[in-house]
Length: 383
Ligand code: FES
Ligand code: FES
Image 1 (tube, rainbow, N blue to C red):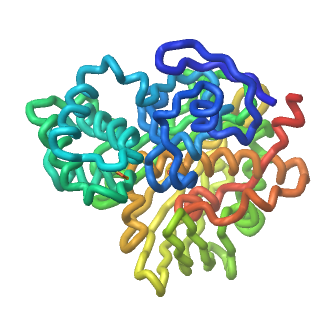
Image 2: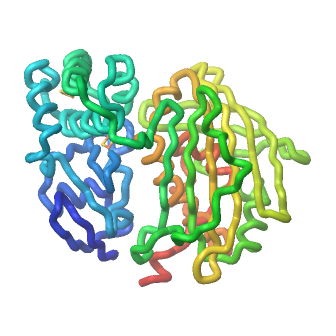
């Protein structure tokens, strides 16, 4: 069991949770904040969206243990929020809800859209709402309501999410003590990755992963692409020759099931401990395709451990493109990163990797995964 201390709707909360406890479970079952709805439980519908440290997050694919030290705001916490009041009123006037199941998540997302973008139009609102599903309304009223409330509003500067999605997710083990994953004086990200996300039509995200093994050991493992692939959810390398790699990736996110076949190039700079994989894949059935690049750099971390800086960039088309949105991407990547760190550490320790952790989780693991594996029994170590 883990002890977590966080702030929920401005109130300090301390709870004892299991490592597998979802944040939504803690909110609904332990704190009785049932305004957070749970639909798909796999990060697709958006009904469970809450605000964590200022950003919308899917509480069904967030571990309660990862929320230690965080500030969480649920729909109940916006009772006195002026912008939310305008949104509630507009939703009501525009008939933007029927059964109301999606509404808490819609409102939380709508508020974030307006704060980030200020005044905006229907097309952009629809794009931003692509991670929130409504089975009743047909979305017209929802979009109209948000557009109306956005009128005259100014974006909160600076915008952290723009057309080319960019973001940073700090990942720490579920049961690690609350501390920054990266020391404040951390080394700069590798310059080779600068500008990757700025490519037209591409999105990018940066990850910083703390691992409890020295850099040389971590680098050796991350240089072995075939071994690493064993820890990739849904990934399989079928051919590896010099710097060329061929493989397949099964993507399963809620209703989206795609089998991407593709190839890519691997570049490894052992001297600087920098690796890069770029590739593309195609799913004949759905017509979805993905291009991606991942660059990783292994640096000395805290307490003789390592810090892995990862920069992911990608471009999606076809059915997969609906996941090309910051909220979903960050949530899924955060989940995947936790699995990655766990699997990598297990692998480094010579432990078996938990089979349930390597089932297909998402396209992001195709890119993140090439440098992944792990899974440490942090629980066992800290028990
Ligand atoms: Fe969390 Fe559907 S319940 S996204
Ligand atoms: Fe029923 Fe959206 S109002 S799901």
